[in-house]
Length: 252
Image 1: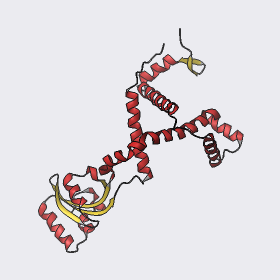
Image 2: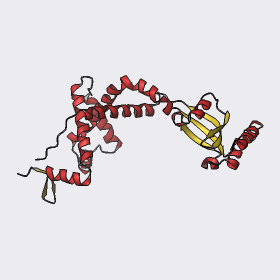
Image 3: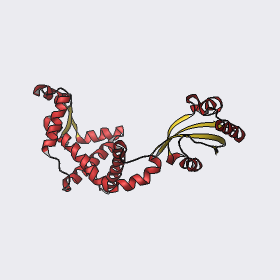
Image 4: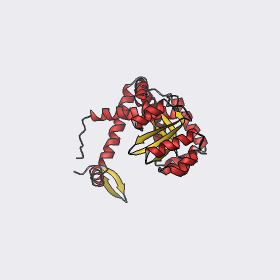
């Protein structure tokens, strides 16, 4: 017996079984199931934790602020907006409340591990703004270093001699992660001060002179960085939870 309609398209009923077949053929069934499992784990965790509570007043005020910001204070305009976005007030209210709960859950899951995770990743999060001159032999590199020490313009020498593409911007590399630098370069930069030119350093059969422009030390005081690390930790926790689930697909 065919299951109840999952969708109706031009008066034709599409069962859940047929919808699953469509997803299989399109290669998107895995993503669909993954989204379901993700939501299941999150909702189960929220329901079982006593520290995840959001005041209804917070949700209501957020909806009021949203309506004011988007000029939806008129009840009919708001109803039209809900309809055009394929939702209703109850669903919209639940979505807003869930957003607050999700953020609170993320904080509860990640805060105990955040400092340690930050320390583990810090070498990759710390960045240095560098300028460079890359040439193909040590003698030229040493000559350019001598000229810089005598007062020659680093920028002019970069434009004239460097083999790197960034010669057109005076050798400016921009921010580079400490963790992605070759060990020999990172060791030299770590003991340098801004404005200092180091080298020549041999890298991949070429020779480089590097000027330290600025150190950009990562900190959890950076709200954007903190949020990115929290999201990464939360996704890792979520993936571990999902891996432990026993999942059976039943379409009959």
